[in-house]
Length: 227
Image 1 (cartoon, rainbow, N blue to C red):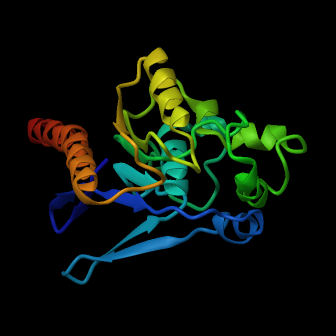
Image 2: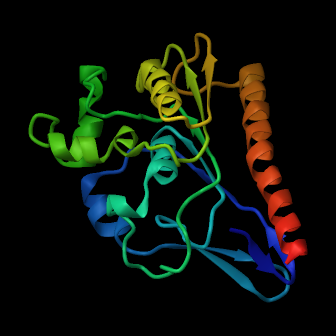
């Protein structure tokens, strides 16, 4: 879906930054509709629902916890029961593609460093032993099926916080379901990187977006002209 403003169709990409979300913050904030408001320069406004971007984001690109949320958006369907009731029900939630920077894919693997377990406990309000169903429900891996968005996973091979194996698993599961997927290892990098590797991965991410968003826009324009 495209947004038309003043007769101009817009493609939207949302960058979701990282940072661990606490369970009490989820209860207080995530269940309440939040709007991102864009001025269009002609007196109009575009509003995007931040946590349920019905209005409609074509590509979420997320870092760390933002990568996790972006994959959730890319893999979840209305049947998964987390659409919410904040309005815009006539608009689809599906996105065109996902770029995941070092986000967790399966939270039930117990592959984290014990010293970092408190981050998951804060997020899900308990340990995996106490809240196994919640850990599964919070895992993007739980929602993958064949009609999900093409996904690129970019991940440091020495990530001390979210193990590189999470990206390898995401790539494997996507392939098994026939989803277009790209795995971009950043050799020797940890939980983020700078310099030439940042430039390289940014270029790859932009090329991935161009492929899926520009191509989709061109097909949409052709369809509109025929109608």
